[in-house]
Length: 347
Image (cartoon, rainbow, N blue to C red):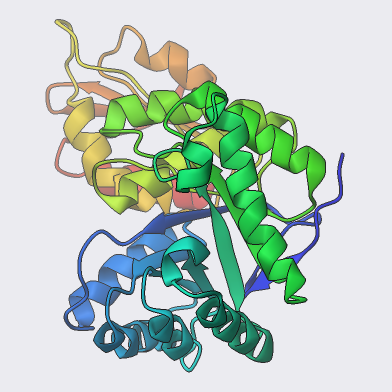
């Protein structure tokens, strides 16, 4: 497998033999750094997020990002367009990585200023190309996938000409075959860490389908060092989806619970939907390599629980908790959640 150079972003290292880092992007303007904001960010971290990106549209937004950086262990990435002064300002705060598009920063001397300061402050720069925003000189190319690669290489070559190599590269397309080709070709030519994602992948279900198919192929070939699942929804769902993909591929950096649950049907006697929602925050934040089954009736419950470390099902107010298919406890509906968590803690 090809050796990828190591790039350190705060307490996260990409490349080398380091695990694939899950990341997301905050989806709202930051107006104040309060308890509720930090609670949401900490929840993302507890679900397995390793990096979090924020838009930095103005100079005034940068001190707020600095405050967030002081309050979380997750490294921040500042997303910057058009104004090189915002990038320079970010480097005065504890923001270890910036994402810029050299093509819209302006004159080359402005990019040079950003790169020089990044070198002085050991700040990582992410550059790349997006299928929907190619430079004018490359938009005319018949092979758009090759155009995306060339666009990324133009940016990379410019940074390297300034003797700067603290770089992460991203090549994204909304077409999964095009996305595969661009990353496969770039990976064959360069040893920089790659940020993977299917851009503009849409709402939850289309995004998860496209990302699972498109990114799994790359990941299984050893391509990609950090991933973001782009979903038109809550960033928390991006983190869950990314970790589920890595879990199925057995590429998780931490232990995670494998949740088995059935949908409702006409014979459902246990509300799996409500119970799963109530226990989800706990399950996704537990560092245990176990499987848990939440089954809707006593038809499938015991059988599925034979293959799970712990299972739960029931009829009406009578809830049974299984361990390897054997009933170990009976609870009422109101006490089932606490009892189930108690049994998970014992494993």
